[in-house]
Length: 290
Image (cartoon, rainbow, N blue to C red; front, side, top):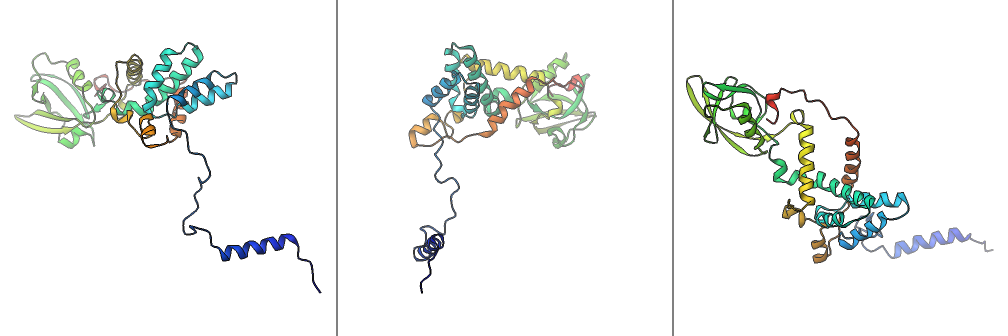
């Protein structure tokens, strides 16, 4: 006597048999979670124009999404964004373009600019001016800094920097001008008056710690460099213009741009910083820029 087998059970059994008889191709390769997903569009002028069109859309959500998408563009798109900013007549669209470009510039370009690095160096001393002999009297080297590692001691008098002597009339402004010219990684040769002897030390300039930063000065410098870029007087490093995901690379070898979610966060961070009061400077004036 035959019994009827439910259709669902029969289908499941067939599936098991087929799987056993015909193993899936590449079964030793782990599944690709991105399989079937469309590759991100390459960054180029056409994509920029498409986002600009969305920034003119009547929906605020679409306009905002387009702005956030543009903030994820690689630095190589900044020259095209600059042209779009300067050519745009719609105030809101121009502001959105400039804001997205500024996000990219602040978070992915500034750290690579030699102009930005100059003045961000840190020798690592608290100091005052010495008049006899003229120079910089070290009150204390800061632990772990370039000065400390080079062997600078309290009460040392720096009488020459990179073979340039501190001459009569050397002032606090003279010293600050030296600090403003330092960049992280720079070597610095110091001639020291230590008691009755002179010693020569070699230091490596470090990165200025956040607690010694001048937030107003940094913001002013960032604004100046951005303005210089917009008017064409600041050139981007070649390595950024030909970075992965650039229009040149995409057209040359089919490389696709990789989304950079950090820049979307950067856009929000900039908005947050605009609404917060800047911290009051609390370090000694003579250490500013050091």
